[in-house]
Length: 217
Image (cartoon, rainbow, N blue to C red; front, side, top):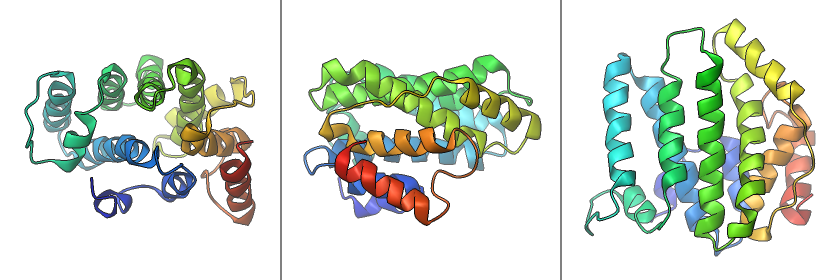
């Protein structure tokens, strides 16, 4: 997978987090981030929810199929096809689909989105040979998602609801293996902001990201 083809699609905080991922973990971490960005683009750009659902269903079918042939023609799908466990990636698709619900978003849609990205982070841990870290990786992914989502929703009522959930969350420091350093960075930034403002909005955030990236805490 050619990294340059996908890096430009990523939000700045994910590009920064990816820079601290060890070389061994970087291709799979980038694949997860790129899939998330691809799904986000489908939801964001769709004029009709039904069309977005059809495109998301295509991804869900591809990720569910365990017998995909080689030469699929999509570098991202080729990379993800090598993951033996993709249930979390399917959950990520389902989570993005949940955000297509009529506003205001019900709590069930928010929960599905947070759970989807959390389970995708758990899949990343397993893909990197870190099955014991799957549960804390999922917890870190859930925190990152809540804090990020609070600032992304255009509906004030929805944003206030997600902010309330983020600030009511228990925010323990989560220790993850070095291979999951990118997730550590994103969770640490989310823990600092807890839904208030962008994850990266100034020099202090950059310093925090550097500390998390270098030290893991």
